Image (cartoon, rainbow, N blue to C red; front, side, top):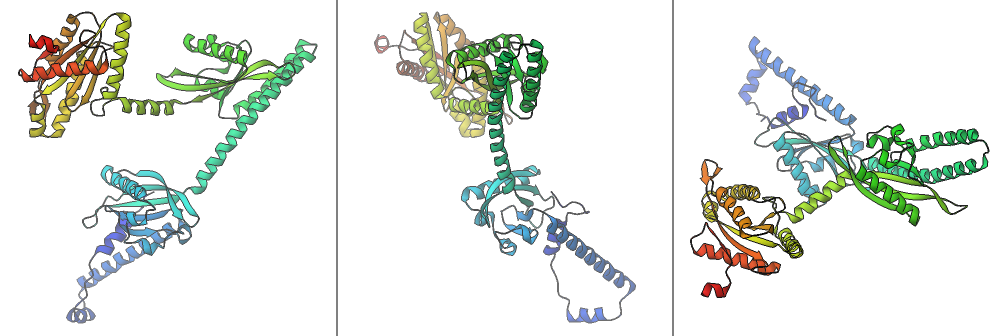
Length: 519
């Protein structure tokens, strides 16, 4: 919400008027003003009075608007100082509004973390020129309450400060209502499942009791229609399959999620509706539930409009109490795509270098250990290339760390183009990189990769009018020729790299055992 219904925002008008200096007229001027005034002077006085009247009307209108707002409005400068505070008196119970003016976000916030967050939002609004929205917990007359804040930058600068208008709305009751709604929905879903089991049991009893197939089918249709109305009234994705995995009931939400018609699903088994790999997992899950008689979960992804959506399917057997046999399988499906993406993102951060996106030291060690194990089973070799960039320190010292970061990022991309699919490129830290070459049959495989590295790594990297050029000192160790475990293989490659450094840099060499060096 912004006060822009007039030619100038009312907050800007009031703040501009407050900052105008007021001069006291001298005695002579006061006497002259009491005398005869020219027509021009009268016009000026009239215009001044008109402006004051206009401002007064605007101020009264602003006061009326503010008294009608459900929000609390603050004018805050870029340093977090409260310049003004507006609201209806009945809307604010924690601070005296006059006591807020001149105070700061840091002093009024309940915690340092809260103050820092509010200052970040304020600065984001000023820098982007866009309204920022946040929810936060804040003390009030009832203890603590939840508020929605809308922070809008004021376009006009007053004095040497920029300002924002911060509208705070109490959403404590709304949040409580949402929590009650969530609990209600959970209870409703549980009741629906319970009712569904009862209805299916009733249908089974009717099927046994009715002598006429026509009567039995009519009763089933009636129960099915009733169950459909219940199932389709909830938000959960629900299905029921028979003991031979035929869909006998699906909710509208289930069909909509998979972009299918309910009539395309009902009467079919999963392999007649879904892709083979998904259908096979569903059928196997059904068999497991029928054999064990307990709930089971199935996680899979489904391609919807080119987007991969992850779901968790929970299914339980519906039992015939009289005979103790399962009569159907009832399942619910939950879309967990967003939580899956967050989990994958956190995992990626834990295993990858934040600057280059390459595998970090921990991930490299894991991949190297796996590569060594695989090579022993396949009777092949693993090559480890330990690379240190030449002349990188000079670039950092002369052009700064920003130039160094650009060089590291571009060099990492170039290394990735030099390897085969399945090989690993990682950054150990600073300007040190490693490359793991798997399934090496001879040194020709290694030489080909090294040739690619030296063919591209020395090409200039542009940075702000400069051309940054680096070299590469590469040390190579081979498993099992030089070592058979992770630490030893790394040590050998590192020793070989330092041997290159001593001989003049920008070259490569294989690890040489001490006895070989002595010869």
